Length: 262
View 1 (cartoon, helix red, strand yellow):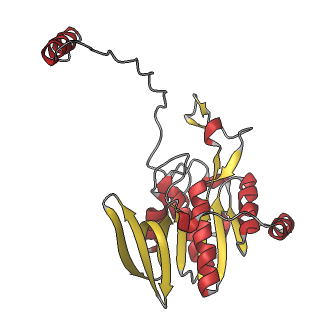
View 2 (view 1 turned 30 degrees about the horizontal axis):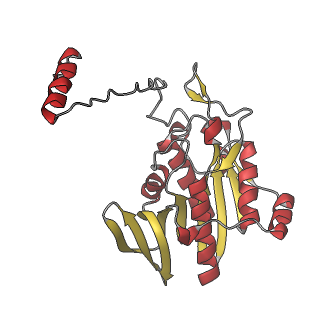
View 3 (view 1 turned 135 degrees about the vertical axis):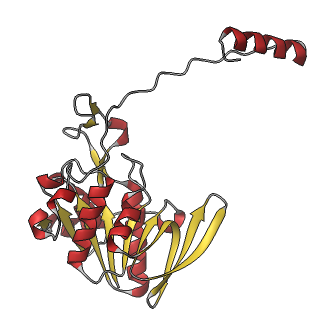
């Protein structure tokens, strides 16, 4: 079984800073981590490999320092890692990112299952996985908490607001994985870390992929940030305590009227 896991290196959420001039994240000097949900997806991939055999390849689109994230994935047990990096990809929104990732997955060829974390903690859009499936023209299942495979069919337990659904899809398919005890990420082994430190991570640029230039980076991104601001702090509410409910309601109505709410 050929398994691909798409991971993203994200800023540590406690250290996020925004450039007020460009409305983009300031990454220089900011600690970076592997997106936690992507680690859940990687754990799901490693368990599938242990159960059914095969190979786990990790893909990441990002700047050169994203190699650190890929090496961490190798240390956890991934078999191979590829970095997709080019200035032409800079400023990509989810549509351009998913287009680029889909192009890289096609270059890999013969992928049975493509895994993503349910969302990235910096953007929180949960769009890249499903959009990649659309570019590839394959089935997709989101919010997976358990994955089983039989032949060319995946049986997936999917979490929803009402409970759990059991969905069967024909492979290849894209699956996004939630944080769950089933896929609690393992720790890198000492042997795996030493091997990862010695690994050479291949880098694919736009020239290595079959892509249309107008669909990459800012040119291929219909979504652009116009403004970023910090919401005003909420002021503490007023507590109304009266002897009777009628008195409390009367005072509440008076305050709402004074504030021109009613």
